[in-house]
Amino acid sequence: DTGVSQNPRHKITKRGQNVTFRCDPISEHNRLYWYRQTLGQGPEFLTYFQNEAQLEKSRLLSDRFSAERPKGSFSTLEIQRTEQGDSAMYLCASSYGNNGYTFGSGTRLTVV
Amino acid sequence: QKEVEQDPGPLSVPEGAIVSLNCTYSNSAFQYFMWYRQYSRKGPELLMYTYSSGNKEDGRFTAQVDKSSKYISLFIRDSQPSDSATYLCACTGNQFYFGTGTSLTVIP
Image (cartoon, rainbow over all chains, first blue to last red; front, side, top):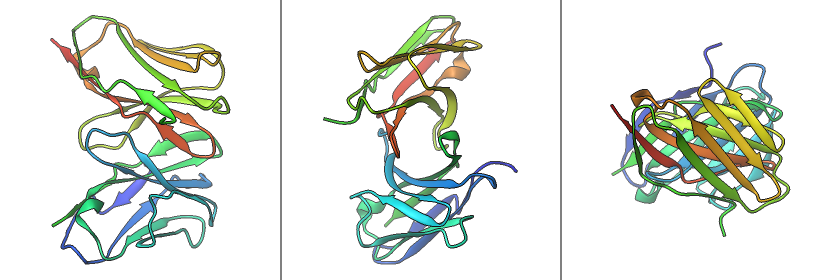
């Protein structure tokens, strides 16, 4: 297991298009988190799953954002009708309970 | 008030110096405290992880937590140019709350 894997690494999209990111957590980790990070800021929480259940969602997660973790393994984060303000690094992290909290390298989204 | 406050710096020190990075937090229910290092265009990398008040040492790094004053610190001894990065503190409830990060440059 090589850690948390995120794909794609970079995504450039036109405003109004939909994008989907994927996160593969460390295999034995039951929790999976999505964060967004903009330049000069720390990561901001978006949502987290325990197994397949989405337990918490931030107010930052507007109705254009949806996340799934259908089998309690990998997760997808979809952004519909992208806006320029969605440009950011989208980070995924996983943990087993409160242990081993590990980030992926992120997906950098640029909306033009 | 943000859950976690961190001075963004930037901080610039000569090689070999002792670096002190600090954060304050507002929620006394936070139980776990972490320091992450983030290089440019990379995801954060866990450096230190502590649960209780006190000190935890790992090589050149020492993490300190004072729950009574809601203050956490990271000390780097004998700093190296490779330590140049952004350092993020984080505290947990059900989710992780991050500081804004402190940008550190160690000058050879």
